[in-house]
Image (tube, rainbow, N blue to C red; front, side, top):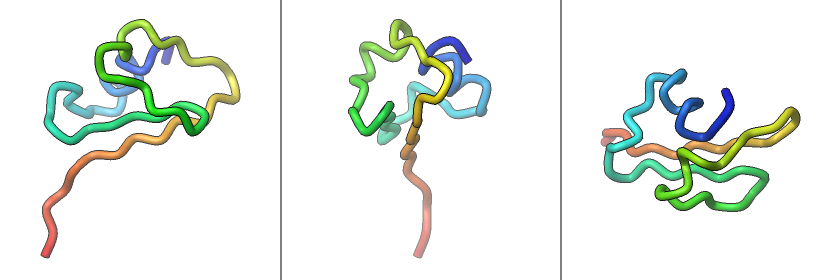
Length: 54
């Protein structure tokens, strides 16, 4: 994936959903920057999304 947003799309994650958060190399990427934040080889990406449980 070229950007955070394209990675989310490729993974089938709704980028507009509440509660989704992304960090690249341990730095949180603000939602407003997802379209522009390029990803490079070796970048560590963490995606956190809400899920229902009990």
